[in-house]
Length: 480
Image (cartoon, rainbow, N blue to C red; front, side, top):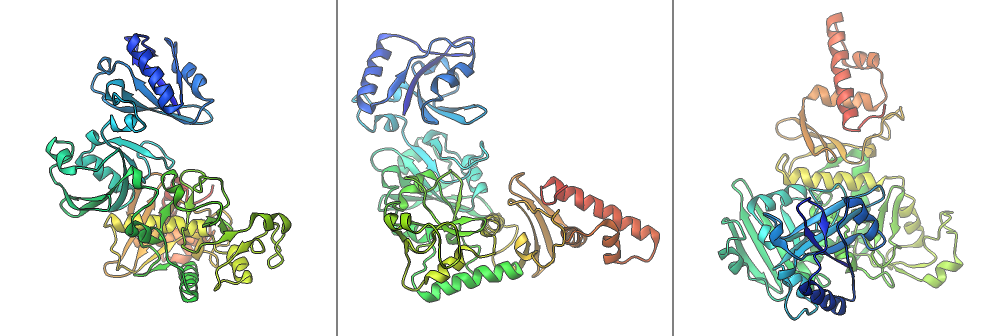
């Protein structure tokens, strides 16, 4: 961790204010946190600051020596973008530090900070977002809910118990936020938002390494018996074959999770491995101490504990069951109900699990946004159910763009892109035209497929086809 002392001068550049109070604090912090304190003079531009700190970790803690010089700001973050990486500096007033400078002073002095397990609205990749308790408002919580769904597990940085009643009285929470349960170090907060209520589970930061049983059950899909394993594979194959998503386990939140730095300690690299989603199938997670690998990398976190014998792995470079260049069964102690041949088949399955994961994640967003209901019978257009239809390699459905058809009740078609954060309701012709485009048909073949009686109808179909192609290309759903 790198501690940086800043103030803002009149010219808007960052500089270090050298005074006795600062020197005393620097010495205390160096002793307490064993961290280097970087002395920064007046900088001509922010890029020199980047060059000074880029050799350290990506995320840094900055301390504002004189926060009164910065208007309307109590705590904030600075993200410095470079060609290679983003350097994120969390800024805290020096007055907020505890006088004893104990191990929790840095976080406790800033009241509570939330570590939210959700995609940041300010950055494209998945990051750990720290939010000061004072900044929590109804709009902020609604924004969080809009990115993941209704139920959120947020970790609170801070020592001691979480007194939400005290926080509410001081005006830090919205008036419609009510605490409905508090037990085992967790507090559940409900916000009544008119059409639907938003639920947030707040867990103390100190307890995040040992989540409560309820959180554990919501995180993993239980595969403890042969029947569970067969049911899981059946669901996968049914979805891949038909694209149908009914009221089953396929889209439920406990089937979907995004592995992030905060919950990386849920599995031990030394003795247990998770099954990890890759384009070519399910692979064991063999990453370093942070099992999450890159923040935002998708995982199916199945509660099948697979033990890996590292010494045996060195002796078995190739798998005898599937011919893989990497050993996939010899060096792994599999559950009793899973044979080596089945594990190899699972790893070399032709289904593209990364697309499946993305579509499931997208479905969770769509259902929770009330565009569709869980009981609706829908069909999702992805490469999974295009296998027997696509004749052209031009069709490259993007991982975060989807087209879906609601087949029960009032017929409805929805086109949406996670990357662009857009959702479109389209008519039946758009849906049919997009399917024809995905098969690689040209504009004349499209007109013949629709059938036309007059030349005017033919031109109308061709014009609509061009509009559909343009929209699909804009959403990265078609090549070219």
